[in-house]
Length: 314
Image (tube, rainbow, N blue to C red; front, side, top):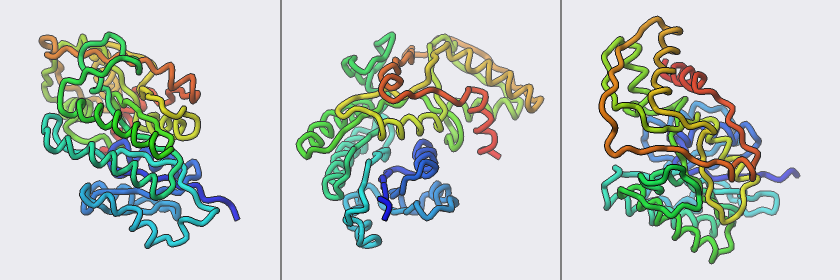
């Protein structure tokens, strides 16, 4: 009998989650996906036709029941021909400065480590954030001391330190990722580029900051591939930036989107660049560790990301 290589993904119906589930399924993994009950986003997973995808609707306060739910549906789960290679922990909730809700995420991250212990998962991989670095570094490298400026970044940082220690005590391999700005298919409304694209297509006037801050975008498909590669090749105990290989002024990205939309659709809104953003945040991540350890290469161009979003939007 061939070994079933299983993975768990929490927050599986989210923007990065759905891209990760697709990437894992395409590469032969059996995926156990935790989602929030009754979320409209769950249809993204329900539309996937695969015998290797298993969906578990559980709220954050029910998260600890996941091993019980899995064992009830799959009583053979501890057979010698089945193993959980990794737990990808993407679930996170709450507004950025809602301290009470942000603190809950720390507990749920530790719950995920306990689930790894119960299900004998080899490796824990969590999605942290560039917000852990704060506003101060000209180049963000993994060995920079975290200097978060809001509850979100602070709780991500706390979850990083605590989960690393608990995983060490249990003998579970641990990897933390810091995700930078993602774009592409399934990107939610209200974010920078969905808003920009919608307004450009509608011919509306758009008021932005100066756009002089350095920025970095990566398609969510590429980010999902980076996470899979870290599952397979990443080093235990390490932190990895997950981002694109080029940073440029945000204004450049905006103008590229404007030109692309105009060429494809013949519609064009008016973009006004104003004062510098406050705070003035530069995103210039160093991804050399990710590249050196996994061989990761960015494959999806910025224009392809816009096209992916347009297809998803339609």
